[in-house]
Image 1 (spheres, rainbow over the protein chains, first blue to last red):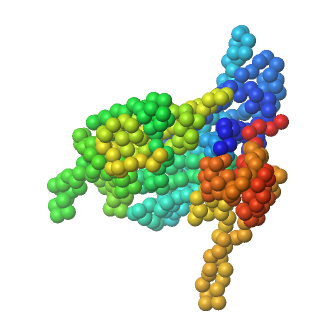
Image 2 (image 1 turned 120 degrees about the vertical axis):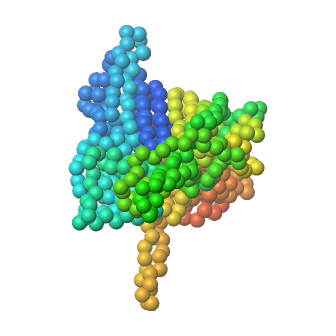
Image 3 (image 1 turned 90 degrees about the horizontal axis):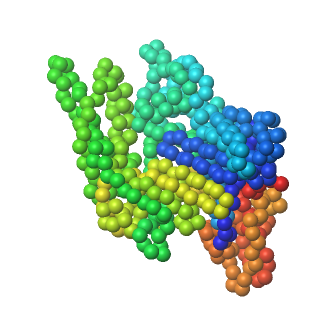
Length: 375
Length: 107
C-alpha cells in the first residue's frame, strides 16, 4: 500500500492552484466539517513577524474573502478524496508575544455560501420547480458546479395567467424553498476531482452501498477511538392534518401523517414509535396538488431519527475516509445498537502526522436488520 | 460534462456518450474514445518493482487498495495494454495520482 496521507491544498482567486510551499510549511491544522446541508472549513497557519504570509500574501489579497477559493483534498492509498471546495469568508489573526504562537486562521464555507450573497427578486413565469432550480444553478457553472435536479413527484405546472412563481431572496434560499416544498434536500458536494462539485436537489436517498464497519470493543479489530449511543424517545412525531368533509365542508376530519420516508428504509428491526402528535397549522385554502405536494414532502422528509451515535476515529487505523450522507455499519456495541447507521455529519481534523475524524450517526430503531455488516 | 452511467472510480467516468444515427432512424449510443493522459503530467506517489508472477490487478490491490484501479497504473506508465506492465519481473511500475489532481504542494 502507498503509505501515508497526502494533503493537497489549493488556494486561489477564481481558479485555485496548488498552494506554494511557504503556505504548506506554515499550515498547522486543517478542519473540515461536512454536515447534512452545509459544510465549512478552517485552516490554521503559524505565522512569525516576517512570515511571507504576513508580509506578502495577506496584503496582496491571497486570502481575501469571497474571491479566494480553497480546495482541500487528501490522498489515502493513492485515491484522492476531495474534502472541501469552498470560499473564504473570514480571517482571524492572533499575534502573540510568545515565539511561534502567532496564528492566522482562515475560515470558509462550501460553494453554497456563494449562492447566499445577493438577494434577488425575479419572476419565473410558467416554470416548474425543476426548471427554476436548473436556471438558478446555471449561474454557478463557472465554479464547476454540475447540477443534478430530480423532478418533484407531484408535478405542478404554474400557468402565468393564474400565478407567477418568483424568487424573493438569495439563490440558496430559493433552492432551499424548492427543496422544502418537495420534501427534498439541497446540498453541494465536492468532488470527485478537485475543482468539480455536484449540486444535488432531490430526495434524501441513502446510498445502499455501506462503508466499512466501525468496530468498537473488539480488541485488535477496534478501529474507533470512542463511540456512544443515545435514544431520544421524543424525537419522532406524527403530524395530524385536518381536511373538511367534502359534503358540508364544515366538519374537520383528522388524517394522521406517519413519520416515514420511502427513501429512508428502516435500519432498525424495532423502530422507536413516535410519541408526539402535532397538529399541522399551515394547510388550508391551497390548491389540491399543492396540498398533496406538501403532504408528500412531509412524508419524504420522514422525521428526526430517534437513535444518534457520536464518536471519533483515526483514519489510519480505520483505513478509509468516512464520508457523510452514506451508510456505515457498526459492530461490537451489542445486540440493540449494532447494525447499519446513516452518517449525518463528519468533521475531519488534520495535523502533521495525524488525521482524525469525529462523526455523528443516526437511525430509526433498535436491533440490526442485517445479520452482518461489511467490513 | 460527467456522465453518471459510471461510478467515480471508473476510467469512463468523464467520457461523454455520443449518438450514432442508424439507417432505420434510431440512434445507437456509444462511448467516445478515451485518450490516455500525459503520463509526465501526473504527480508521482511511489515506484514499485514488479515481482515474479505479478499482475496489474494485484499491484493495484496491494498499492492502491482497489484491484479495479489497475487502469490508473496503465495511465501512470503510459501503457495501452495492462499486461505490458508486468511482462518482465524487475521492471519499475510508477504509481501516480489521477489526472487533474495536483501534487500535495508546489515548490
